[in-house]
Amino acid sequence: MHKILIADDTPQKITDVLDVLSIYDNFQFTESYSFDETVDLLINSNFDLIVLDMSLPTFNGEKSGSGRMRALGGKDILDVMDYEEIITPVIVFTQFDVFGRNSQLVTLEDINTTLDNDYSNIYLGSVMYDSRYSNWKQEFIKLIPKELTSGI
Image (cartoon, rainbow, N blue to C red; front, side, top):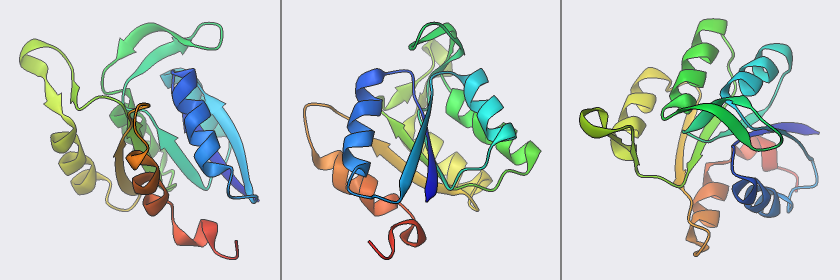
């Protein structure tokens, strides 16, 4: 059984990821909804894959995130993973192509370049999610490491 962490504060995105991954019967899922919860899970558990939203609230409310929104919370989580020496493959799963505000705007393309350079040992790539279309599903499946899906 492969353990998959889905870190996202948008319930519909989580549901859609679970729907796509339901074709794999050897996956066990854990969900997290905030930066703090995700970091806690990563430090105290082992996962085989992380599906990570780029923008996350700092801490949880009910089942949707609350607290200050971290525009680059996903990158901050990768920083923590690097510091804690957590070597788990990561797929960024986002519905935005620009992050931040005003003069601090960063494009998804720029983030991809940075993450490829800084975390090449764990960063698998990003998927641009749009619930109106299904083309993201094939892009997402292509990024899943083959060793997690072999034998299915």
